[in-house]
Image 1: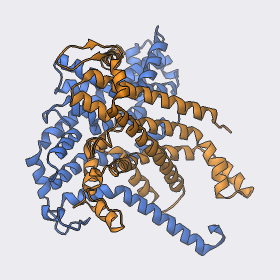
Image 2: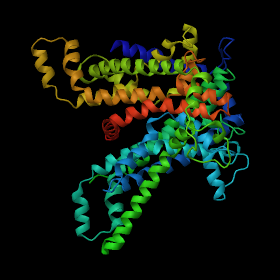
Image 3: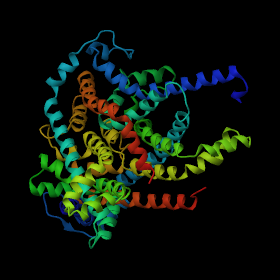
Image 4: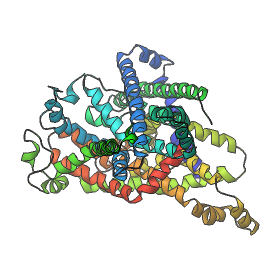
Length: 278
Length: 278
């Protein structure tokens, strides 16, 4: 137990506090850190790059979270029924979860290549054409990385929903059927309320994960074009490890922590009020 | 309602199965494309219009992987990094979890709350100070730099603590009456009982570290210490056109994880389901 705490203390807790301290300093690697109080945070407020990264992060999370969770629920409902090929489809949906997003994002960039990418070619056949290529088009790069994010994670949430569905007693559905309730009322009155705990957990997890989006963005766009896909983690990486402004990068990363914390608390409060038990 | 009529019902079944199959194939599509491209000759890869399946089958891209990339080095690095982290982390996490679940000592509550707090903080915030700290130790671009900060983690401790709380104490008490030491109880009784949870957690740890991008990207400065995802992501940035070898390298990177997953799929999915129901 002691070695564990030592590792946690030295490599997690200490760096966290250190990050907080650095965020109040001007630290550029080659010169020692100099205390500048709230200046970094003041700079954040007026820095258009930070505003841009914040908006991008929120936009990414606001689209991918509901889309992933909604699709996951739909897939779980579909694959919870007996049907041929069920095992195959479940596995297919889940495989992206276990593989490296960074590596598979390379294949995605290739698929979306304007000249030799198959997906880009198919999309242009049905009239969705991007002259510059999806990843170089300021309007389309973000939807592209969002789609990859959803593709990667939907299987994980689906499995969590399947577990939730299997814990709902079949008696309830039989009773509803005897009372003549159709498909929609059965979903609305039984499935959805009894999944509310699952939904809360999944939405909070998905939101936290999407706010930290990095891998596929790094591979597919490096935050471009024109910073259109630069999220807060991407910005921390750029400011910290490309421009070596450690103090300022620490402030950006603390802004992310604050954002995740506040949003998680808000969601938790929202779901708590609506908790259902039968 | 489809159930009113046998013909309609059959159509409905065929339709829903076809939809499910289409979704499954769509999810696998990028991976199929990756594999198909990796066995196409260069001329076919760049031909227009792009096609999914190769006309001629070739393994030249696989041979090129070793010419263009220090693939063996990257592979060995990834195995060392993910393997060591998984084994050590299971040991340290389980010891701490045992202490938190079973032993009474001063400060236990504080430690547990601390772990819950760490569970919420995204690791990106520790990135910059951690880099600074490791640079001070001269550990940048070393195995210990990559591995040591990952030796234990809050999620693992939390997960195992919850599991240990759910198994009965009787066996341990019996051993205690027989005069066994705490270490012996932990090693001979608690660990064997916790095997299912350890396997699940081990899979999580292995998958997470094998696939991770940001951490090895920053700590591994060159290909002597980078892992596969970081190495391939950077290669992608430098040589945009060489998709053949890149796809072959990607297939080789993903293959171990996919094979591993298919073998232990059941347990893995069950593991996710149980983390969902707390």
